[in-house]
Length: 293
Image (cartoon, rainbow, N blue to C red; front, side, top):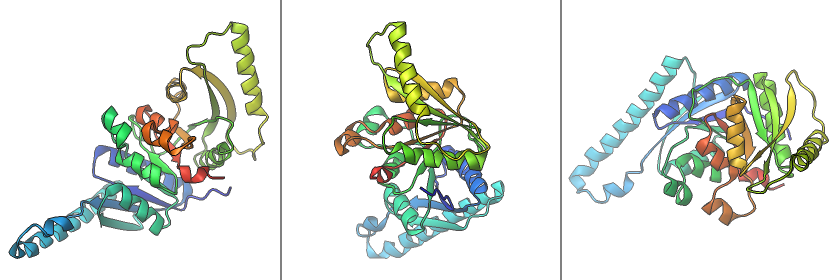
């Protein structure tokens, strides 16, 4: 797979996380020499116009036009402050997740960069944040902010792997990102051992077997960066990934959202979505559209 990131779409709601996402988007644009487009989605006020009297329609329409102008000025001011040149500044109306995905497709973006939104546990299960809704519908990778300090470059990239066919796509992107940022890669497999107990000898045998499988996979062209393999154990994969990333001070996690079926994704979410919810670093998420190989 030939990985290209030539056009990046930054979606903003003018929150602090959106500002953090812009710093990441700026770093990616520099590393890949990519174009950068800014997008803000305002609510669709069309239904409201049907509820107001005719005399108020013109005034309300004018207010909407002014809001769009103010939004554009805010993005231009942000660009000036950060010394960023946007290829395009777009202000759309409608559902934010839907418009972000549609705009990425229409503008042929290769990557969407968006701030992670924190919702309650119930909302995450049944609705999902704007970022998760974008990820579930997107046909291109989605890069989401973490909870920590925003960064524009990455030196330690973590790539969780489960030996599935789709992991080759993760490795394709990981190699491209490591080359662009000059980052080192760690390919990690998490053993989900749950509450089962193993003797030290049995556990070591399992670790050695998995590590051997990691090292025997198809070789990649070596770059100027280092690649290492590691195995860790955890009650569940998502928790193990987040804990490992924190312990090893990783800067970025690269993983796909492949799951066994639609119902699992709807009710439980993929491991990627769970990692996004709890990781303190950005996650480069490869959407389910890439899982159909």
